[in-house]
Length: 110
Image (tube, rainbow, N blue to C red; front, side, top):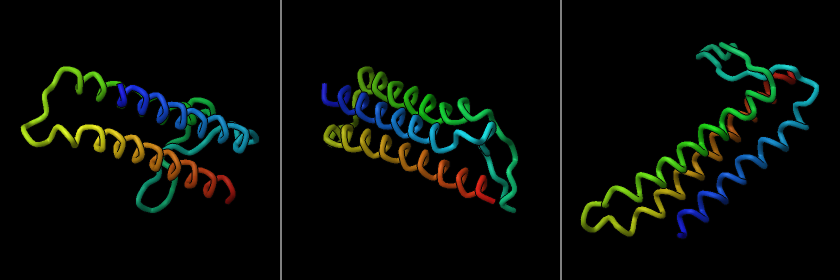
């Protein structure tokens, strides 16, 4: 039950961050999605699709992990690590989204 509540909370946070970014990037019709090693943008996406992509992938991953947790048994001694690992993955996804938004903002300001 706790993992469902955490998954819903993390999903809501990801969506909230994307909604706030929508107003921040409103003037831009396209946002950068991937950068090369040189710092040049490899590809762009329409703003709303680009902002929805990370939360959509993250929510699918979170609920996929939730389903895996229901069907797979942890190894002996690791049962107490399932929930902290789940939270760490969700927080990492939020950090990835923040990194993407920071890089997009930096690129669009140039």
